[in-house]
Amino acid sequence: MHRDGDPKKGKNAEREANTFASAFLMPAEDVIGHIRGLITTDTVIRAKARWRVSATALAYRLRQLKRLTQREYKSICIDLTRPTGLLQGVFLKSNQGK
Picture 1 (cartoon, one colour):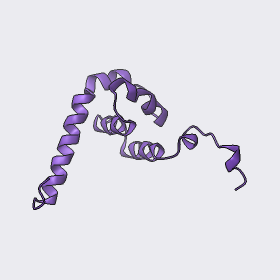
Picture 2: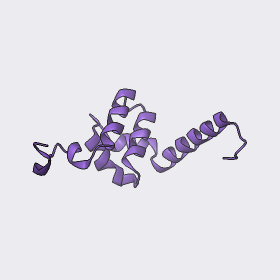
Picture 3: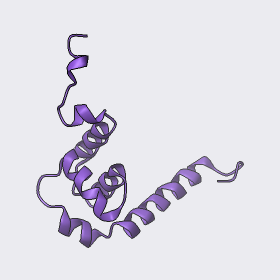
Picture 4: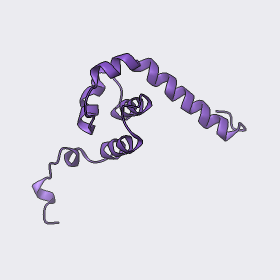
């Protein structure tokens, strides 16, 4: 973005670019056809390899396609920022009792 540009236009342009890239990399019909039923963080992590995108990008696309509510999307994004062991419900013994 240009330094003296309108910040609102910059954010809008970024949103449009994200929307375009998401649709280009993950076509709606393909995503809907391959991800069905209850969508969990684990579902997103396992499915991301199909489109070679990040889990966050796939969650964003699922939200765009109204396959996730805003609350579900936010919950998955929060889960994705947690350490892997916590995501899988695994706690290292060395961390217990501290």
